[in-house]
Amino acid sequence: MEIIFFSIYFTIITIFIIWKLFEEVQSQQLQTQTLKKVHQSLQELAQTYQNKQKYQILDHIKQNMKILSQIQEQFLNSNFLCNRNLYYKPKIQ
Image (cartoon, rainbow, N blue to C red):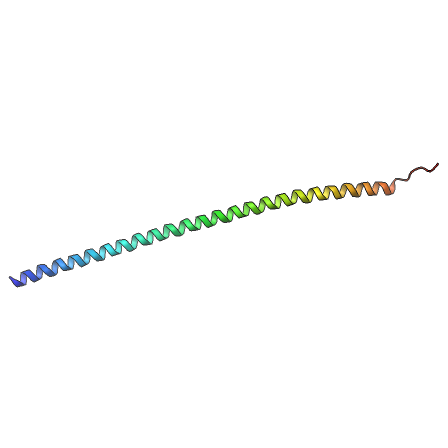
């Protein structure tokens, strides 16, 4: 009788330990999956931020190019006027 009791007791304890280990493994797998999802989300966020910075830099470069074009145009116009005045010789009467 005692042998049956101890064998049932150890069987129940063994099943309980296996069940707890199984729960722990599942919990660790869930944590791992959650961490992978968080890591992926952070990578996507970082990529989005980098793309946004690139677009902002490109917009800034475009604005600077427009300003440089305007300055160049003004410079060429002023040079043209200066050169025209150099070659223009008024008639002396």
